[in-house]
Image 1 (cartoon, helix red, strand yellow):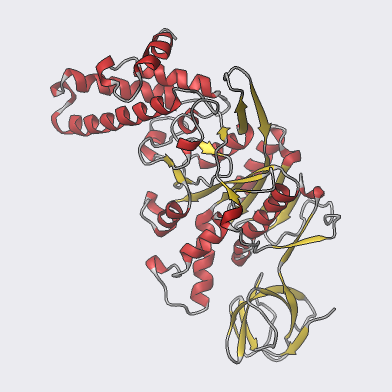
Image 2 (cartoon, one colour):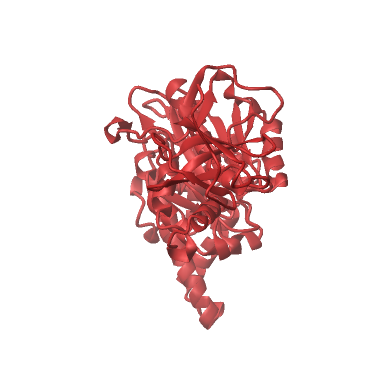
Length: 469
């Protein structure tokens, strides 16, 4: 069934064209634009006025003229075809297959904007995800259904860290005695927005070499793709994730990189529309727009599946107060912050100890989930490392030789913490028991009277064996 068609445009402004207002047209409805050459371009309704409609074209407006262009309103939102054939496939940012295997064989089409989840239907995330990375599992634990972004910067190894999480992440469940455990694997939805071809190739090669490619769905909107396609790509990816999680009851891990490129595309569209800019030129609705993506994570009643999100964003000039990381931190349940100083000292992964945070960690660790001493070890490591930072600042002023014996002991602890607990190989997969034992090993260098955040019975049970490692 064909929609309403109009001939002629009022004006053309880059990738946005303005035409006559159509009846029964809704915001974000799909539009087909035909140029003089008969070529078909897809777009969506960007704005509605009393007498005109603004249409955002996915591509460019080269070859269009105000007199000869035809506009067809398709009377439906943009949809993604979904089915069991999604796994192992590669799509562009508009959800079109680009791997040469044709379309998905399915009659199901889902609105890429998703459906709002009733807050009452959500179930609280509590299941521990073991990433095999000590700095995350031990101190910033990832929980199934959580949205935990990676705050990085140009040149930092956030892509390597994300690939390692994809390779190693599993959901652990223990019996009551914590002696037997089972694990479940994830399916992965990977979405690239505005990244270079070599970064996309790195992820695809890593998926293939690690054997997870058959359970990965890939959406690529690379740097040479139309910038406006970046606004669609994450919505297509999350639509695929919702189908796999809530229809097929799978555990889905969504990795989206780079959210900064997404926000730049949003700023570009806002500028074209002539909107009054907010902080650093970004639109005033940046918060709500990001929330419309991040909030599509979680677990819902009636489905055993889940969506866990790891968005990656590169902070401009390593500025954590920049609007993109600032607003993302408000919406998500914590952040993994990569530290340039640690990276320059050869520490991988360079996860900053103090700025990093997982707000759901407290509900996913402890007896029956990880280990009884997890909460105490994490708290003590945070407190001791905070003291290390203070002592290092003092040493830079008065010199290390002027420090007290206690302060020198904390300097030694800091070095040991970074070299034993934080640093690990890119393909080193540590289980949670190994991570906590390493935590006790570095704490063994501190006086017993300084271990105020751990129970005495845990010191007797875990500290002495760990000190002999």
